Length: 143
Image 1 (cartoon, rainbow, N blue to C red):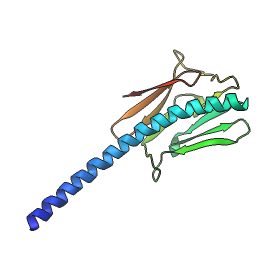
Image 2 (cartoon, rainbow, N blue to C red; image 1 turned 120 degrees about the vertical axis):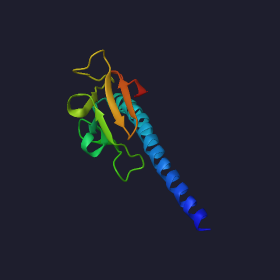
Image 3 (spheres, rainbow, N blue to C red; image 1 turned 60 degrees about the vertical axis):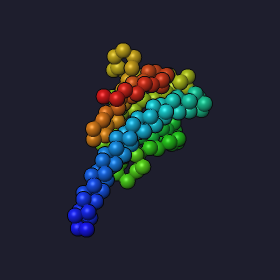
């Protein structure tokens, strides 16, 4: 009986560790898709409100927000400890870690080569790169 209990405990521990790792990797993938969708949301909000709208990434807190020029926040997403989707890091490869869409729905991507900017979402074993253009159209690539 003791042998069966020991084997069961070992197997439950292995399954729990594997499930935890899978959950973190899946969270990073979901966060990448959500960020990709929110780029389009920021653009649509800029066009609809006829005001510049920014998506601002805060790497230190692993979060980002979408706000207009007056400071009204449309969306706030966080991927830090305690959230539904937890990632190890989040970054936007643009000056100020932000992208702003003008009222016509175009973003100025300063310092970007090839017309594509990148955002990066990292989990313990995977990295997702969201490549997007001035209209917010994006493609997610797993590294």
